[in-house]
Image 1 (spheres, rainbow, N blue to C red):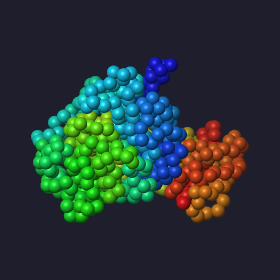
Image 2: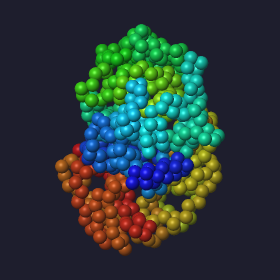
Image 3: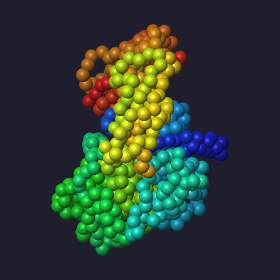
Image 4: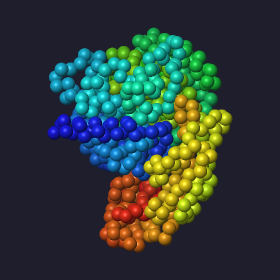
Length: 563
C-alpha cells in the first residue's frame, strides 16, 4: 500500500513541476489553513484580503496533531498530499509556486521513521522544519533521506562569498535549477517556496501581532525604502561564521542604492532605520537596543534554537524580530552545529534589494534549508519594480455578453520592458498575451453571473516581478444568474449564526462557499442557509453562492466582518 501511495504521489509531483508557471503573486500561492484553529483562520482572513488571494487558492485542512512537531508520515498524508491533490483538482497546476501555511501547523517534522534506525551523523539530525521540508518536497515524498543531504538546494548559488553575490532569479516551480542558482538547460531540481505566516503558540507571536506585521509588509511593496541594512559583527562563532561575506554584500547593496553598514556589537544600537539585520548571537533583548525595525525588513540571527518555538526552549526565538515589526525571520528548529550552509548568507539582503520576494531571497541564500524555519510574508518585495497594468475593452463592474475583446497594456516606471501578460478568470490562469496584443473572450462559454478578471504583467528581467489589475465583471447571455443575500447588516459576532438566502432559477442545488470550501447547501433553485460565524474565523470574510452542475453560475462576493 505504501508503494502504491508513493507512486500516485510522485505522479502528482511530476505533473505539478512540469506545469507550474510564473510565480511571485497571489495567483501563484496556495494558502493552507487549519480549519480547527481560530488563529489560523483569522490570520488567513486578513492575509487573503491584504494580498488579494483568490478563493481558489485557499485550502482548509483538518489538522488535529501536535503544533510543535509531527511525524513525517502525518506530514505526507495529512498536509502535503492533500495540498498537491487540491492543486490538481482545482486546475491550478499551471500556476502554483508557493505552499504557504497560516498558523497552527507543526513547525517541525520528525523524519526518524524514514531512517529505520540507521540514523545519520548528528550534524544532519533527521528533524526538519515545516517550511524547509515543504520546499524540498520532491526529495522526500517516498523517503526523506535525500532531503537532509548537503548542497541539495540548487536554487542557491555556491559562489555567494567574499567574491560577491550571484545573479538573482525570480522563482518558478516549473524551472529546474542547476546548482549554480540559475535555471538549468537540462536536468536540475524542482522546488516549491514555503513559509509560515505566523506561529501563535509557544514562543510565537499573538494573532494580532502576526496580522500587524503582515499588514506592514504588504504596504512595503515597491516602496524602495531608504532604511539601512545592518551586518552586526562580534567575536562569537555565531557571528564570525558569516563575516567573510559581509564586505562584498555591503558593496553590492551600495551599488544598488541601498544603504548598508557593518557595525560592531550584538545588535544595531539606537538605529531608527533598520531595513534589515544579520546578527550572530544566542540571546538578546531587542527592546533594549533602542533601534526601530522598518516595514518590509528581514531580520535574523545565527543561533542554535531560533526556530525552536517550544515554550521551554532556550535562546532568543526568531519571533522577537516579527514582534517588533519585521516582515520575515528564520531560525533552525534543532541544533545546527554552527554549519553556515544551514543559515542565510549575507547575500540574502542583496537578492531582496534586487527586487526578489522575501521567500525568493531566503531560498537563494540558504544551501541546506531542511532545518531552517522561515516565518513571515513570502510575497513581500520592497525593492521590486512593479508593472502598472491597464485593460481596455472592459471596465470594473461592467456587464458583458457575447464576444469581448480585451486590450491589456502594461508599463514600468523604470522604463523597463514587460515580457508578457497573463489573464486569470476566477483565480485560474486562462491565457497569456504580449503587451498590446488583443485578446478575445467568448463569454457564452462562461456561466452567467459574477466573475473576477485578473490581468498580470510579468517584467522581462530575471527577477520577473509582477503587477496586476483586478476587475469584477458580470456576464449576461440570458442564462440564470445567482443571488446571495444576508439577513441584517454590519459586523457579526464570532458567536453568532449568519442567515443567508440563495436563489438561482433552474439550479438543481446551490452551495454557499468560503474560499472554495462548502459551508452549506440547499436542494433546488432557492433556499435558506445558516452558517456559524465561528467556522469562518475573525476578520474580513467573503462568501459566495455557486450553483452545482452545468456552468455553475456564482454570486458576487458577500463581504462581512466577524468580530
